[in-house]
Image 1: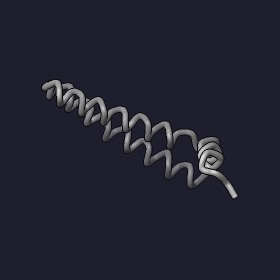
Image 2: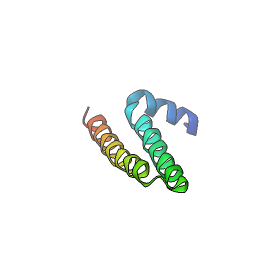
Image 3: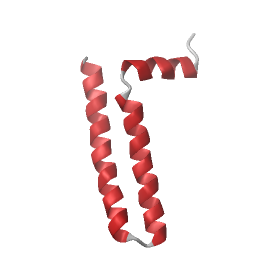
Image 4: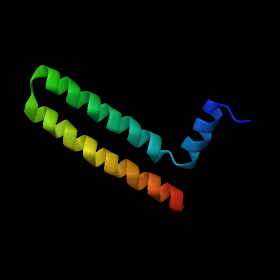
Length: 68
C-alpha cells in the first residue's frame, strides 16, 4: 500500500508540471488577495489574469501528461 508522500513523489516524477502549476496558481491567487487588501486594484487585476493563465497552463500540463 502506497503512503500519501510516496504517491505524491511518484506523481510528481511522472508529471512535475502539474503540482508546480498548482503552486504557481495558488501563489497568484494569494498575491491578488494581498493586492486587493492593499487597495491596489490595477495590481490585483494583473494577478487575477496571471492566475487564469496559470490555471490554463496547469490544465494543459494535466492533459498533456495524461496523453503521454
